[in-house]
Length: 238
Image (cartoon, rainbow, N blue to C red):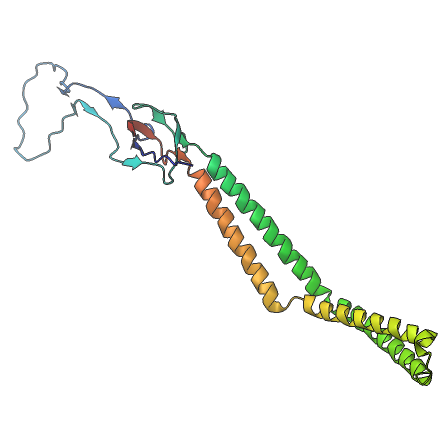
């Protein structure tokens, strides 16, 4: 599938809370006319003269930031225009997130599989002694039965019709049972996970969790949000 690279540039100018733009006129506060009185004679000295001056101006923050999506994709929506006032965390623009959602779902499925494998290993490790004991008990019984069948067979082994005797059949069955019990015991011993196996399973869970976090972060980045309250100064896309 052809991927479209979209560059979205947004410049957001922060406005101060409670701030405002205003125009005024330069004025000097006039003094009230005073009643003519005879001047008093005073001693000459130094002092401060204060005047209130009103001047035209615009209250503005110097905070400015250029924003663009940190992941590549096809632009699906622009939610603002130049001059719009936005608040922190407002969604300014959105990319098509279908592929990002799919990747996130795959990552979640991999995590669930890894977690199930780890849980099964932990359960098996906790009951490994019981499983081996059961298998060893069955093997011991099969071995005793085989020894008894072998002893009974040896007693009539000299006969020419030994193959037709029940002792021969019993020995065959006892041999098969013993081999089956031995195989089960070996499988039980091999199936028991080691501490290293548990560590590997846990590491796999951790790795898939990281993959989930990364996929979720990329999905979230398909939405370009305002980092602070401000005014959109310019919107450019190509």
